[in-house]
Each structure stands twice: as structure tokens, then as C-alpha cells.
Length: 498
Image 1: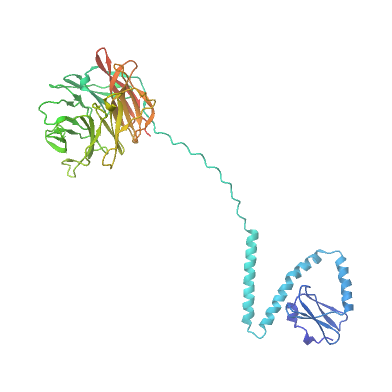
Image 2: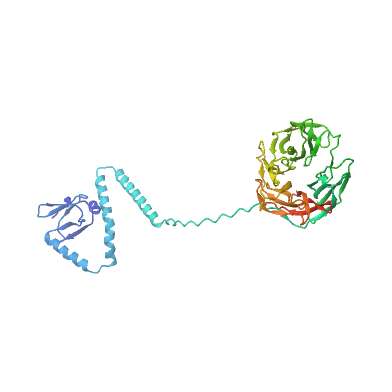
């Protein structure tokens, strides 16, 4: 008989690896350890001819069967192995595969608990449960969390759309006669005013006329006519469409007087060796820049910056040079003073054409014509002034698309468009066969589109002047020689916004 005191307690039996009770009789139970063959074992001879199998993994004593008993067990195992396996028989080994380590862990904790407070066992159990929960959670996350979607192949970037070039002006109707006869010496000026385009010209030596045209259909309003005792040199319409007759009389203290453009124009001229300014029509003036020498000035232009009268940019011709400068009104509005030095652009030869000046956005541009060395064809020149600059850019040549290297370009004028654009008008061709053309340029002076043909075929045309309303509608006026006199003509144009 095996002394029951030598066997593990009931708790120890439940905690040990899988144990089966196999007895040859009800009075002599024998404990057989079916521990895994991988466990290290020591066989020790015990009293009564029994060998005690000592399992070193968990230290639970196990008794080895006698040889006869082992043979019987082997036959039983072979028979059970060869027998058909039911569903329960298939799952039982898997179940005990998990239960066996759990019993082993429980028994180990029980031995650690012996002689210690219950708190130690609870601590170990809690720690094990926490580790088990973390492990199960991590496994569940790996099983049930949807794997990241495979990276989609990047689609090729759409080709960049070309940036549309700013639009250029276009001729939108036939040329029309405005006045059958005008005097060439009186010049020609066109200004955008309320209700249309005002054109100033001299009908004869002592008669000045301002006609207003509607660009849509070129309908002509009732002309304003004024006479002068002195010879009319120039007629400049103001923004109300009323004519202003300018004549250089000997009694005017300001030589080469010229009104500026704008809502409240001022006069610019020369007096006492200085470039001066004066209120419109006043004989009292204020000095701006001192002018060296006694050479006269002419072709004065003054255009307001920012669309108001707080500052003006000026351009004029003196000798064979084109001069440019900027003036601004003082804080008390009582005076104008220079804010830049006068900047000189020397012509290519002894002859230099009259300048024309316009402002668009942050850029002001001056254009004129000259010829290098006084010989060869006349070419278009230009200077650009950008707001905030102390001086204009160096002289540039305006490049005309499909340019004829031997052609001459004379009498240029320039008018502002929106978006920093300008419309330049000029005359070209051999003597007595001049024609008027125009092109749109950007702020940098590059052509936008092809040049426009403004004048009619076969006409000896020149003195082109353009004016454009805020909506882009406008006209180009010019003089055409016919039978020994000059006729005023106008061509409607449209300069769409950007």
C-alpha cells in the first residue's frame, strides 16, 4: 500500500501535469505520470521494488509502473490508437494541451504560496491575468484589425495648363471721317471723357475744335468751336469734353506751357531757367528743377500717378534728349516739389522725336522715335519707370513682331490699358505713303498679339492718337492726306480686360 501521506495533496494533484489513476485493484492505487518525454527525469529505486520518477520541471513525485503494467498499458494505447477517433477524441488532446500548463502554473504558485500571506498569491494571479489579457488583446488586434490598405499607385500629375496671354486690342469696325479738313500744325489729341472720346484739333490757324465720338458706331456729337486771336498751336480736351485752346503768346510768362491730364490739371512749363508748375491758367508759378543752359523745352507731358493729382510724372524733349522726372504735392496742398532728379535719355543722333507718356498700374512708360547716328531708319525707343524707383530704366527698343529691319517708325504715342498694359500707335512706311499701326504691350514692353492696321489702304496717314474708355472701347484717331489737305479719321477698337 502507498502511504497517502507520501502523495501530493488533492490540490497538488489538480495542479500537476496530466495524471491518470490506473489501479490493478481497488485496494492498491498506483500513480502514473504521463509527463512529456521532453522533461528531464531521474529514476530512483524505492523500497518495495518500485521506482519513483522524479520530475524536475515542477518537482511532483511520480511512481513508475512495473514492467507488466507498462506492457498492459502499451497494448491498451496501441488499441486506442488504431481505433477510429471520434470528435471528442480529436479535441481532447488539444484541450489537455492547454490545461496541462495551467495546472503546472497553478501548482507552482501553490508551492510559492505555502507559508506566505494570501496577498502574494493574489499578486501573482493578478499579474498573470494582466499579462494574459494584454497578450490576448494584442493577438485579437492582429487578427481582427483590418490591415492597412495597399498604397495606391500615384496617378501622373495632370499637365500644367498654359497660362493664357493677356488679351490685345482689336479693330472692331471700319474707319470713319470725323472732320473733312484740319490744320496739321495744330496737332491732334484724343482723351477719354464722360460719354465718349473727345478729339481736339485745329480747323484752321485761329479756330480750335473739340468733337466727341461714341466708339460704338462712331457717332459724332455736336462739336465745340473756339476762336483765338493768336495762332493755335495745340487743342487739348479736358475731361468734361470742353476744348482748351493753347497758344504760345508773347505775354505768357510761362514758355511752352502745357496742361497735365487728370481731373484737376495743372500747367507745366519753363520760366526763369527752371521747369515750373502753375495752377491751371495762372501766371504765378513754383520752381521745380533748374535747367542748365538756355535751350528751350517742348513736347511737355504730365500724367498723374495713382489716378489722382497727388503726384505726376513728367516727360519733355530738350535738344536731342528726353527728360523724365516725378513731382508730388506737399502735405498742405499748397505746392508741388520734385521727388526724383531729372533723368536724361540721350537720343541716338541729332534728331529725336517728341515723347509720349502713359501710366498703367505700377508702371509708367515713355516712348519716342530716333535714329542711331542721325542716319538709317527711325526706330521706337522707350523707358520704363516703376513706382518706388528713383530713376527710369535704361533706354529700350520696342520690338515689333515681323519687323522690317529697313522700315522707319515715327510719331509714336502711347495710352494706358488695365493690367499694366499699354497701346502704342505709330506711323511707318516710305514718304507720302505712311500708314498708321498699333500694338498692345505688357508692362515689360513685350508685344501682345500682332500689330493692328489702323489706317485705310492707300492713305498717307500719320499723327495717330488713341483713347480708351474704362470698358475697353476706344478709337484711334489720325490724319490722312488727301488732295493737298488733311482729313481727320477715326478707327474703332476694343481692348478687352484681362
